[in-house]
Length: 53
Image 1 (cartoon, helix red, strand yellow):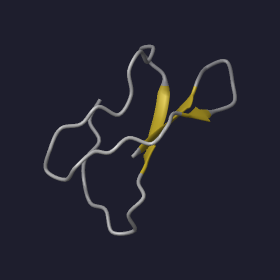
Image 2: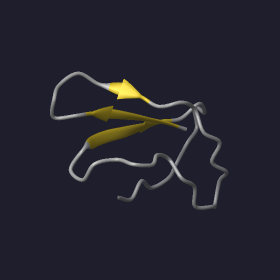
Image 3: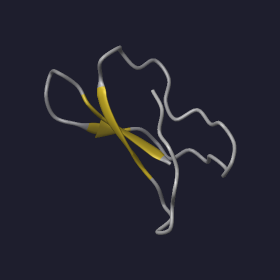
């Protein structure tokens, strides 16, 4: 998965790709400021899941 951010300062950026396996907890990003808007990108075309924050 890849995590992309939309900081309040404008624009957006994405971190590097991380491997997160199905049916496990994984770390998508670290050192993210509270209130930062983000979204997740997956490499699979048939992904079902839940993003909690």
